[in-house]
Image (cartoon, rainbow, N blue to C red; front, side, top):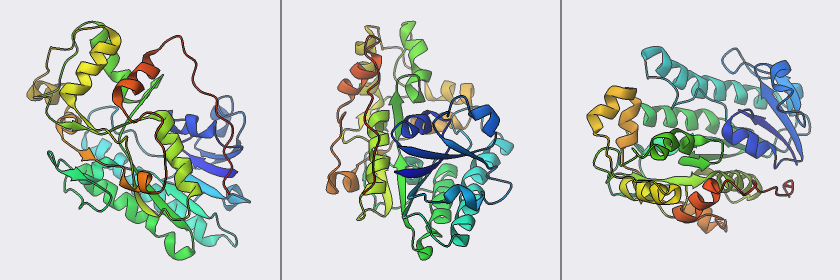
Length: 312
């Protein structure tokens, strides 16, 4: 498959690129990215500056749009929030502008979103038909998805994976959690009753490819494992996998003082269900958290090396 990827230098993008037989990458700095992305054909693109070059899309069958200002890095100042919004809304709109100019277009645009779409929802089970939330990230996700939907009238199938908490070796959410647990001071956040909807990085990449391959999938696709867990259960299983105690809770007010507005997201409860993935036949490699953590934290194992994917 010849596929174009944005955000290819990120934690998810690097893993996805390894599964693509003919990767094409849009990046702000091709010279800097060349060493890390030696297999890929590189084209320059600043998502906020304008549409990407049409030449990058030649013979491309699928587009995976993952680029966006990191949400979990840095405090949410006014300028940070504007970068989060613009990188998704403006960047996606600029991408679609180039698609509109092409004589021959890719069959599918897999444009990332996030389970932040739903906002804080307590114990309510959430599937792809559930209503959106109203907080900052929910509004951003709605605009993000709306920007990508502009490709639908062009004859491009659009899928929006609403990505949960990504767990994997060498990055993602787990990398930020390990230090306090290894020091024996890990524990629940707030009251620990909030639901965490997570996904192993291998399953996330698998779902992105599944979305590109399965013609019946369009619109939202919850990219989460079937088994959401409470924060208290998550910390218990993580402590067990690390053979460390996990009983020192961090009160909600302290978390917000430490990391600002983003800390509130860590206390939000989202019990998200992957209904579309399961209905369309995706089989999760890591449906349960214990197995996912065992795989990620097994220092003696090597990351899997699957064969390159081919879109039919």
